[in-house]
Image (cartoon, rainbow, N blue to C red):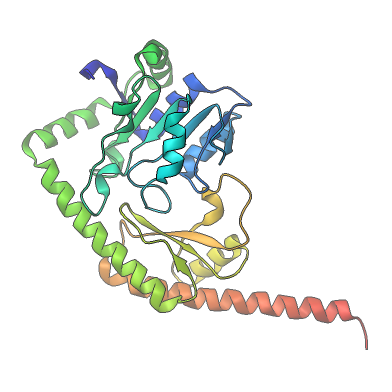
Length: 299
């Protein structure tokens, strides 16, 4: 790989968009995990591309290293099936350097350079406001990608690139990653403990890295209504339906983020969520009772 193979983009989102625009057309399908990055799902749908959990598709979108929203490693069997196929692969490795165990796996582009579109970003490890990402694509697509990039914004922000270049010249980036992983690991542990304390009937996916924890309730329900109830109690979450490629499962689910939450505030936030959940469940029970009474008719 040469320096010219790297296309600097305005964040990872633009890198994904460029890859989609050279690979896919309206009516095509893209293979994704059952839960995936919402902005990518929105992008696919806006382009008329259909997300599917099937590994038989026009292309695949994967998150090696650390997935979003479950914050675990990618499913090895699914990833192997995708790599063994002849599909182009958009490999979004935004969280790859933020595994709590410190393991940074070899990017997929090293194994399948002829059909892998490698996406990376500094937004998760350094500063979201820089909006600096990158795309490494098969060389056959390079001219088309540069044309699309120029048409979109001429170039990524020069000031942000200059500031970042100055930072990494005098800054121990690897040491920064070690500190960041430790901070996020402590927050993730605290968040999991708080969920198990205050919402013991919920299933929690143990995070292996990243910024979030994925939680599934023991019942179905209206995630938007629960969110409104949670906000009324001074806390919030990302509804699970935002991450779903296909129709919702029977259980209510949501993502809890810890990236900008102080360690000491996590337990309080989840205790408020538990209060909101209890209120939500009482409201559902009251509605069910009212419906049964109305359905019974006059005595």
